Image 1 (cartoon, rainbow, N blue to C red):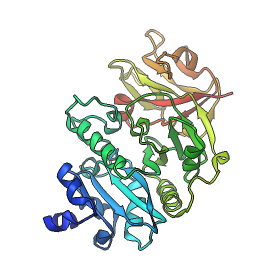
Image 2 (cartoon, one colour; image 1 turned 180 degrees about the vertical axis):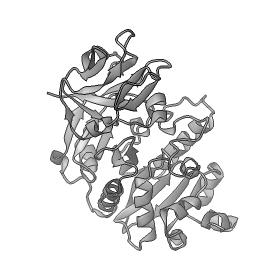
Image 3 (spheres, helix red, strand yellow; image 1 turned 120 degrees about the vertical axis):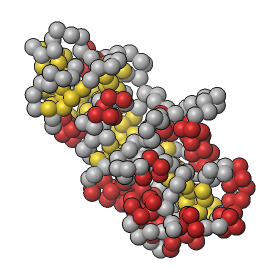
Image 4 (tube, rainbow, N blue to C red; image 1 turned 90 degrees about the vertical axis):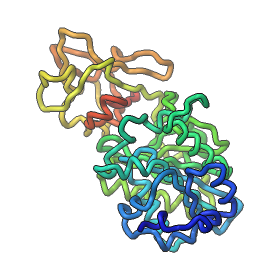
Length: 362
């Protein structure tokens, strides 16, 4: 049987100093400490199979007066932060400060096909409900509230939320402010930050009285993404001072616009226009995640006989699609220089979440 299934009740209640109290308050949350590091399965996949539900690993640092937090697997198909956390937990390394690792949604990750499900079927996207009202008693809203509680209860000095991009992409950070502390956090992983004022219900929009940044490590199937997560977490876990004036290393892209399908419009990806979808984007569109897209760049196809089935919502809630894209003779082009990111050819994400984000560039 797996590690977490073998532990008896008495052991669970002594997992952490305050474990008994917190498990009584949050019976669905499982807490573990350094004692269990040697019992963790040697592979990330084996480790995932040991987990069921919101799981916390608390590591004791050399300086026990401070705690740093990471959250991972908010999306079950974004494994880089989980893989990096597994490597650290399996090592004998001692972090500089106390570390709390919050594994948020292992149920989605372990649903077959493993590491391909963003969230559970017939559920909502967990990273869209952190702002849900207390009156929302859905399972996913309750999980979001539990995650916020376990982050807050250790009064962290910093929080990193680990993700992968929906498509093939370099790494970047996302945050709702560009304070020097936030930029210092991002610099541990990447030199690019998307500063956003869009409100989508993500955990990074919540106030924990600590700097928080989301790290998009790159595509989920890219070994380089896992290395970004591993190297960044090593710095985050071992540095005496993570706020060491490295903010100037980070390039900030501001005011992203979220591009979505309108209503029940459909999208496809191909080397030619598809007669079975409302809009067709070029098959290699994910490559635009890696560069500035110049005005006039070809994006895809759409019938000139219908309204463009897209909207591009800015931080004020205004649709900017006419400033962003233009349709000529059934072909879609970039209207301005822009930095496109989070472009994905995964139909489920492109249809139910968004096609991509963009910032306008000089």
